[in-house]
Image (tube, rainbow, N blue to C red; front, side):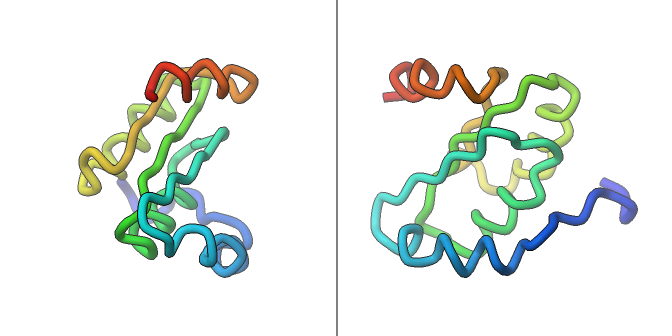
Length: 94
């Protein structure tokens, strides 16, 4: 991705607030508006034991964020869906 990509807003504040939950073994974080994946990338980088489930309705955003999050392999599960489909997505993923 180019250097002109979107910069996540309030990123450090989000990381600080989620740290107590994401430092636990088996932690799963859900991003219901993945976009270009800035917050999700930071979460995966900052919490190496955490797993990500991320949703977005925009197929192009999923493609771009998929490239960005590829280094995290199976820790990142990206799903084409809208946020109100979250219960069904989580059920399907187990």
